[in-house]
Image (cartoon, rainbow, N blue to C red; front, top):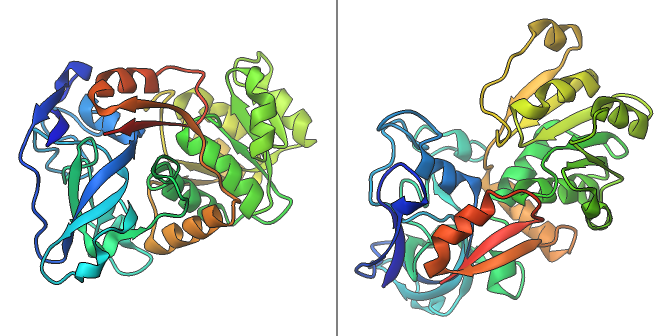
Length: 344
C-alpha cells in the first residue's frame, strides 16, 4: 500500500511517500481502508519534536519510533477482521476513536499507558490502517470527509468545554476560533451548552461565518485595544476562556476573566512558554486547566451532537495523500477556517 511516513524529527522533508506492506489485523482488530484523514497540530508537533527534546518527543516518555505513519482523524471502511471479531463488521463505514488506554471509565485520556494513533501506532496517512474493533464506531455523518474532522479536534473541544462547567448564558472567549479546535469550541460552547461566545480571529472578514457557527461577537487579535474590545463586547469580564494560542494571548485572557473565572488551554500555536504573575491567578481566584483529547463518554456525546446537527463539520480544503507535505505547510498558514483533510 501507499503511505506517508515521518522518517525523523524535522521539517516537512521528513514526510516521505513510501510503498509498504498492507497491515494484517490481529486478534480483536480490524483492517480499515482509509477514505479520509484530517490533519491536526499534533502530527505536525510530533514531526517537529515540539512535545519534548532530542530523541524523546511524543505522547509517551520514550518518544516516537521512526519511521511512523501519522494521522489520527480517520474514517474508512472495514475490509477485513481479525480473530475474535464478527465477520458481519466487514463493510462498515467507521470513525476511529484515536487512542488506546487501560484507564478506567472517565479517565482513559489521563492513563499512563494512553497511546495515540499516528504517534505510538501507525495512523491514517495511508491507504489502510489496523485498529481495535471496539474503538471503531459508526460515522455520525454520511460522508467520509465530513465525519473525519471530529475525532481529535472535536474530542478535545468537547472535553475542554465540559471542564468549564458552563451555564447557559455565561460568556466564554474562544481564541484561534477559526482553526480546527477553535471552530468546534465555538459550536460546542454556543450550540450545545448555550454560552455566549466571543470568537477571536485574525481576519474580520470571517465575522459572518463565525456568527453562523454560533459566535455572539467576533474580534480580531490584531486590534490595538483587544482587551478593552472584549470587555466592551461583554459589558464586563468573561466567565471563561477556551484557548489554543498560548503565550500570545495569555495575559489578555487572564485580564478579561472575571473573579472565579476559568482558563482552559489545549494548545500553544502562539508560543509555548509564557510568564505568569501568580498574583493575577490567586487574587482573582482563576482556575487554570490543561486539556487534550477526552473520554469515551465525551466522544459519544460529541457524536450525538453531530448527528443532531448542533456541531457541524467545517472543512477548509482537501489534499491527495501524495500532497501531505504541501498539506502540512498549508495547515500552518494563517487565515484558514476549519479543517484540512487528506484523501488517500
